[in-house]
Length: 244
Image (cartoon, rainbow, N blue to C red; front, top):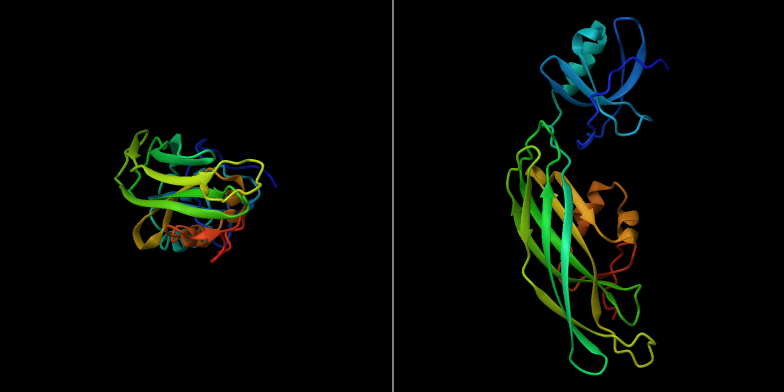
């Protein structure tokens, strides 16, 4: 395929999933695109198989049939939202309460950054999930604590920070495992942000296994965000009710 599009060089927007459109330019060259937005007389899109790079072209550079396709598809697209960058700085304090038993106190400072140079992040409802792993059987995960918070509108190139409340968990630190009574030690976190009508606006986890299990499934992410304190699950996010 001949390359005939000009990259705008900033692919930080959440892609809108849908059927690719086959469009043709005024010189008769055809390409499949995934339309992200229609802003005035400008189409903004990605090209399947070309990664997340974002492109833009005036509608006048497409033939009449393609212009109609793009206008029809653009009419049903939601407003563009910048893809925020989420990070969490975790504070962990340990205190021995017996020979092997440890009390761990955990809190977090969460940063939500809007790296877009053009778009304002609209804000949304966020949830942080603190995850522990069983010190006797580290294949068992548990939700140690959750906290809901609001993310306000974030102007372009700005950020928002939120400090969670601290909580404590207790676990057996006997690494040999003989006689280990278990308990859950903090291991990782999940942060998700939902906008209007439950639209997923941002997600981050520090656990590679959970990240791999979720992939790019927005429905699975939203299901995980419904986990509450005490929910136990495995690395594939399957519930383990009743497991120690």
